[in-house]
Length: 293
Image (cartoon, rainbow, N blue to C red; front, side, top):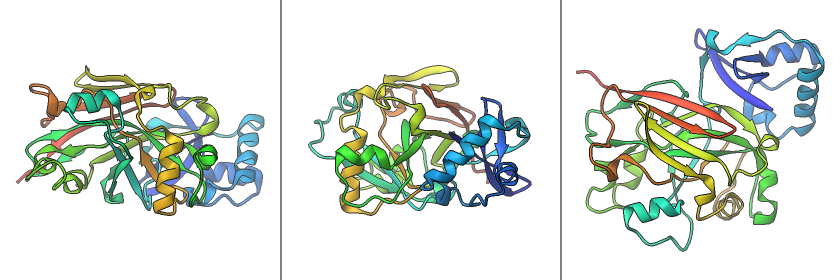
């Protein structure tokens, strides 16, 4: 199952992808099934029985389809209660920044107000001078999880999406690396994601996916999720020991080497187009704009 969140004239809903260009809106499936499908995606994710019914209808009934070009694509989970990001989780990135490999998982939070859609603009704030990208694989939690073991963690995943952990490096490194970490990550539009959620069943091994980030078509990051230091089951288990994970929570699993801060002329400027592509999921593409006086 692939779920797309979209809006038409500021009315938001979601649907189910049937190919790369078309989807079936939620309410079309609802009419055929004569079964109530929650308007809130987060309420659908843990309902496996209803999801199976939806899947069956998509394959057995000739449902009306809508082109994705006719709608505005929103973040897959527009109102996520938690966005949890993992820091320093790729061995190539740790080597790039010259730090020691972490002995335990390091994470931080982004606010839901940072979320924007897969093709929306990244807004460069007036107070930010050093804007950077971080292409990442994100996990969408499907069921409530508390104090779970790594061996069972994958069952709590609904699916995966593409994420860009946009960062203000001048804020991040103000008075040392850790002092401005949260501040650097929390601006509006600093969490582009999408273009949809790909169900867990479609990706056999999330630790063997190619991840590429381009800026104006130039490849900047070219790695594999196999380079993660802490794998997804360990991440979910550890976070669930600290906080309750809920359906629709987003966990972004870290970025590989190639971020702009560590290369000459690599930081983002107005007009740049950043594309993050992950194998078996798709791509997001966001242009940097500046706030005008």
